Length: 216
Image (cartoon, rainbow, N blue to C red; front, side):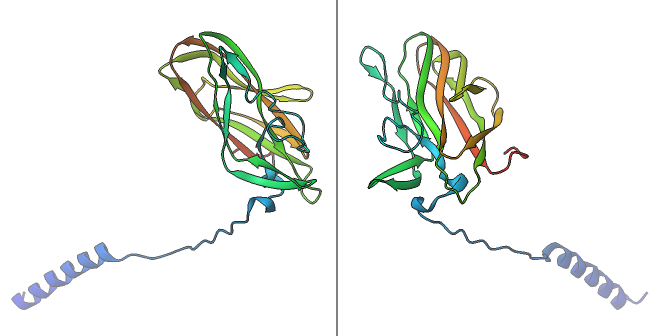
């Protein structure tokens, strides 16, 4: 074989190797998120946490009446609200539903039942579905430098308990869907046994949809 031909063949093989290593097929997507203010929220967007005791005159059921209750020796439950995600006006007063709440409950060692510490409701308007569907998911199980046992978040309708979420189960544990009608709300309770001193934290996610057929 001619030596010059051999050199050309080697060079061509090397070039093919380089091309295979540096060629990319390119695809793309773009997205735009249009964000309206809280007063525009309707339908599933107008669901959230509230206390009728903290917002006197609100045109939703009376729930969340113990959001600031005393637990022992001058110690009180405290609830901090997150962003207002829905707002409306009744008789010149503005009312809100909140995206999230942070609850601080001071207790002593022993068994406790914290009743109606806050509420979750659906304001709704006639142009949107009469019902929405809600799931409660344990995002972070109860843990910390203290300890509790037999711990549940309890969801109540006017007819009684509709669901209990075990706060000591594994992450991702979900209950629901529960049907929530327009102008309706649930009260939220906590039941637990505080077994050692310290602090214990947990996180629960709440998911709302028009459909009940698929869970989040």
